[in-house]
Image: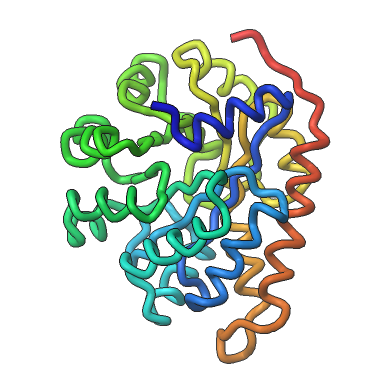
Length: 280
């Protein structure tokens, strides 16, 4: 079965360019503003959308995404509203892939079977659940695949060649390479090391390899897109939301443009990359 994610990466491969994968937090700073941003992302240049499921204890995320999750929860965001937002997005866009990213606790509380059924019905294409290792694939990964959703796994600089086949075993859609050791938004990636890592991962899989954590500027995006199949930007977009908010942490007229203007710059960076592949 071909998913929207598979179709999008196949189309981009024909175009000869990498994907821009954008991450925002569902419900940040409020449901209506977050939905408007979500709907605007493809036109601004996003090829794949990651939508964060707000959680109180996001262990892999830095201060920007932690704060965004708390803003969203304070504004009343919950899993049901996240699915509703995806469903509303699908009313105007049936092509752009949406990946829900987050942690297992809210999914477990919601109920795995109900979560997968509601995600599929809303129009979700894939999942990234950062705190479920391959050893726990029976918990969510295999049921997700059975439900027709891609389950996207993270590889890191510390994932060695012995561990990599285990990580990749049930991975589909794409591989998310975490370019730094540490939390999101903590440092800028070393593009030379990223190219080597992408080539190493590609020795083990034919899946697209997308690179994230620390990508903030069009220059970063252009450099990463030379070797990776996708560039993931999250903290920079979430921080753009925060900086646009009023004194009461509410959205302003600057909130939407702050995100879409940055996405346009990042998209231009990705599209301007000269593709250079290292030999796997």
